[in-house]
Length: 491
Ligand code: ACO
Image (cartoon, rainbow, N blue to C red; front, side, top):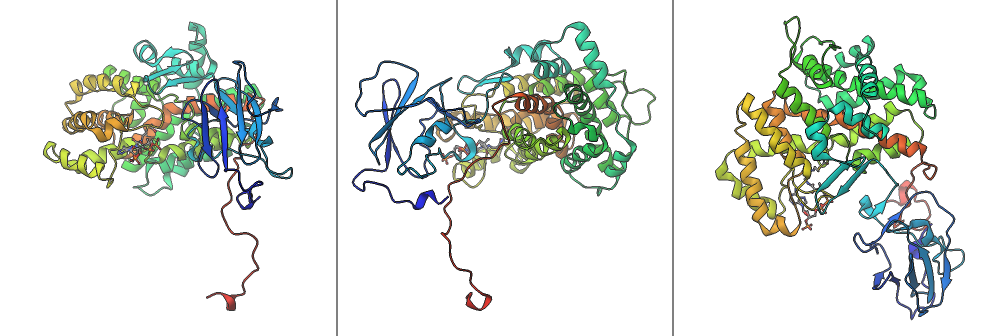
């Protein structure tokens, strides 16, 4: 495409766009910088809709209307593009050209900082105010009054279940918790110190080979069946991965227990005939699962949508989403927080560690978020959950170090000016550790509840007529065509 190589028409003109919204004109440099003002207007990159735009003369007096006027200073041409839901359609920019055979303008947005990928009805976040809602219900109320399975139903189906719907949903999830014996053989093949997330990613992908009918993604019944399987089997795969790393025999699901109660059973059951989970720990884990169930277009949800957009089966797409979650900048952060707190070691070392963070030598893991520029509402709830767990299991000695990091960071200009607050991962690790989980299990404990969110995002993407296979553009900065060099010609 080599768009960057084309010489601008009219050399006297500056390579800028003049963008006028309702009132303020914004001048943007053309080139590889994003030219969208932060959270004024986002660029939507869904499927092309036929642009309903008009070319307007520069300087025309405009009435207030839902459009954006753009003047291309390379050509002096002006364009008017529709604004809908505070976004302009990225494909509306394509009409902006210097020459008729140009590809047309694109927006440049590495890491999707200001690009809406889809329209969604699942999760609402106001990052500045610290608000999180699933399907319109506040996270605080759901954490207080709901269970994970009710919340998962809400996220997947759009409404809280009635009593009979909940019974049916619980029955179906519970009756899909067993895994094929051959999957066990798979897990057995891993080395004793294999990271459980690596085992999970592989085992989830392997499930697709056991359920080839899952490829029938536009069949509602099939999607529902795979949903039961995925939500039901994730705790089993997670628990079996854990037991494998200990060299302990697998503990099979107990259908009489709750979702989290059964998970604790498969993790920690030893010789007792019937495992009885501690109700406080069972509820604490359930709340943590509610808090992690969905988080709109995060890295792993985007992986789920992107991979799913190729129409692969949901097991393969979920394996991809789990892989995305594994990274230390995403769901792997809770593991990194624990390692960081262990490295700090004592209260006395906290100021020196914070200095290293400010000097850019390391990060304060569990702090900062792409969307939240305020306290992550989940972190607030988690602090309360931690109190309940510590009452039973004893106070985690790393808690004081974490609290001191938070105290210093919330007063320090480095963190305040960058709006870096504790995110969901800052305190979860402490709870998980107190409950007896090794650090390598932390991201797994994130992946289990996030599965319902991933499936909801995947299904919404599949049923959205505007969506197609996800395929971004690039700005090519490499060589023009050049002649091949033989081995002798290469120095
Ligand atoms: N410690 C120190 N500085 C930080 C941190 C941090 N944890 N997070 C961001 N910053 C700084 C950056 O260095 C940057 O500074 P600069 O402007 O001087 O260059 C500024 O704050 C903005 O940060 P970005 O990296 O641009 O923010 P972005 O939105 O791209 O990244 C992220 C968000 C990845 C979460 C980042 O804050 C981070 O790495 N945090 C630590 C890892 C973590 O806790 N991840 C879990 C996120 S929650 C989740 O996924 C479930």
